[in-house]
Image 1 (cartoon, rainbow, N blue to C red):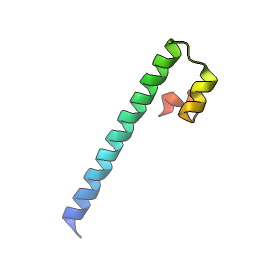
Image 2: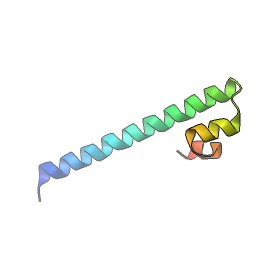
Image 3: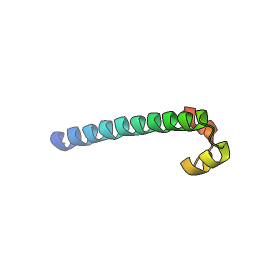
Image 4: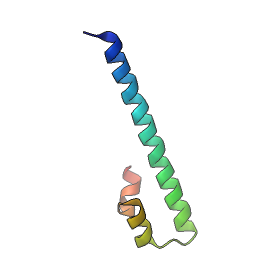
Length: 58
């Protein structure tokens, strides 16, 4: 077993998961701000590429 490669792979996975979680939080926050400013829900959903109902699941 190549322990350093395994450790690196695990670290890269953790880093990617942290980045995904941060991106999801940004997407939720920016979407909420846009809606609060009166953005059209259909246009917003088209812009983010998913239904607004999916945002809490990210």
